[in-house]
Every structure is written in C-alpha cells, then in structure tokens.
Image 1 (tube, rainbow, N blue to C red):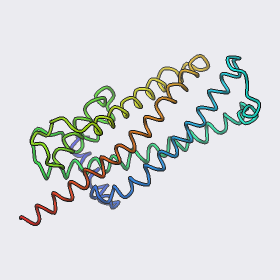
Image 2 (image 1 turned 90 degrees about the horizontal axis):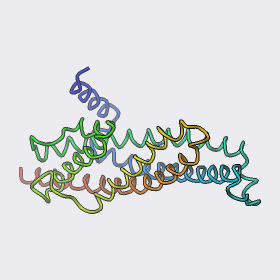
Image 3 (image 1 turned 90 degrees about the vertical axis):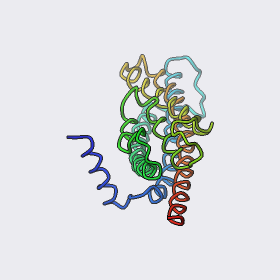
Image 4 (image 1 turned 180 degrees about the horizontal axis):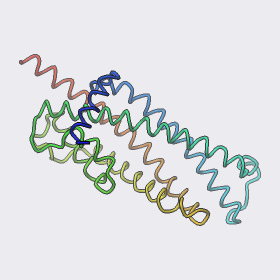
Length: 236
C-alpha cells in the first residue's frame, strides 16, 4: 500500500476518534505520561529484586534475610510477568498517543511554516520506527516542528535548546540499552540474564526522564502553535 495513502487513513482515523488536533491530544498525553512513569518505576523495582535474586542464587552476594523472604524465585517470577505485561501494554498506549500528537503537531507546523524541505507529518512519526535511522531522523523532524511553531529561528534546521537535546539524549540512551538487552542478552538465557537486567536498569530511568522532557516539549510546541494560530487570525 502506498505510504501517502496510509498517512491519509491515519489522519482520518485520528479525526474519527476525536484526536484531531495537538491541543486535544495533549490532554491525554499528560496523564498517560504519569502512568507511563509509574509503570516504569514498578518495572524498575521488579528488575532490582530480580538482580538481587540472581546474585544470591549464584553466590555472588550474601542474602539479606529481611529481603530474601520477599524475593523467592516463584514470587519474583510471578511479579515479573504481571509487571512486565502491564508495562508493555502501557508503553504501547503511550507511544501510540504520542504518535497522534506528533503527527498533528507536524501537520500544524507545516501549515504555519510551509517549508518545502521539511520532513512531512507521516515521516515524522515513521522515522521513530525505523532502526538506525531512528537515532537521528526523529530528532531532526521534531526540531523542524519546534522551529516552525516557535518562530524564533528562520531556519527550521537551526540548533535548539539544551533541554531539547537532553530529551533526545535520554531517549537515545534508553532505546539503545533496551534494544541491546532485548536482542542480545535476554535471548542468551541464564548466561545473559544479569547483563540484560543491568541494561534495563539503565534504560528505565532514562525513559522516565525523556518522557517528562518530551511532555514539556509537547506543551511548549502546542502553546506556540496556539499563539501563532491566534495571531494569524487577528491579522488575517
């Protein structure tokens, strides 16, 4: 199926469910970001207990009696599958709602500043899903949305604030750590378990930080777009 047709169907779908502009979608993004953070904290706790259990079982660390009774193999295993399953569902929901916002924010930015060199709304979302390219292309696309919305810089590819760069740095670290953990160490079974847990323990805090930084960016861009739209209506 043609990519542009898919993009048009995605737009129709978002309008159909009431997510037809970035301001409306942002109202969903705020509570979902907090739920995403809570799910990640729960996942972090389970991972920490899992790491302790592994160290105790392998005789690397002496068990702590007060905690050992709480982290028996069966308890950790049950908690792990409940928390991870819930965590994965929440991650999918959060990423989907954010994708709605990204698409409409990019679409609005293109209307405000119709630069022919910009990355289109559909590709602004799609680049997040393409391995390797998702290490820099989404940043470039979001930077263009930021500049077109704020009107601060004339060049849509101009440098952005440190906060913006910090968001992307945290997101990249989280994505890389999770990708290596999931694709390299988890499939290795017992031999790779501790390394997988260690990488996830790195990925989760950075995911939480990047989520709140991105929420701040979403609020700023939505505010800029509202101001620019109102100004255009006044002087039209």
